Amino acid sequence: MLLGETGTGKELRRGPFTTRSKRAERAFIGVNCAAIPPSLIASELFGREKGAFTGATQRRMGRFESANGGTIFWDEVWRFASDIQIALLRVLQERENRRVARSRPIPVDRESDCGHASRFERARCEGKFRQDLLYRLNVVPVEMPPLCEE
Image 1 (cartoon, rainbow, N blue to C red):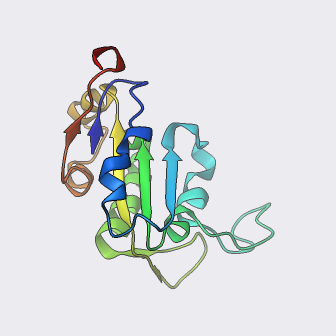
Image 2 (image 1 turned 120 degrees about the horizontal axis):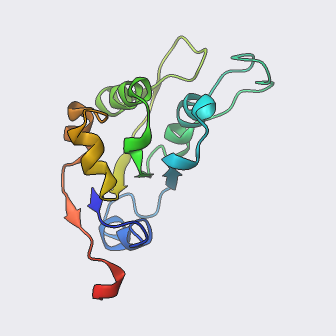
């Protein structure tokens, strides 16, 4: 988990961590959690089957399937609502993804990296971010200095 102020380039500066990984040559999927509309989060992350909801005219892979064998970088994951945090935790623990409207799970093998700004700590203290999800994501915390200090 990369921790630092907004604008420190956490996603860009993850390079040394990822390039030494056995997954360095595989897919890297960046997810700006704040930019996904709440009504589309489940479909974007987990994918969907054709007919899952009005307007779902074809099957679509989600971010987990797209990153299979590679790495997902979660930027500002603390912004997700509790129900999405629970679903995210389940995928991380079980290594299985369920598309919206699919009954069978899809195995996924990926690493997860995170970037968080200082507001994350406040959300955690206020109980808006699940402790068990934090445990899964915060394996190796790395504090990123502000750009003005470099």
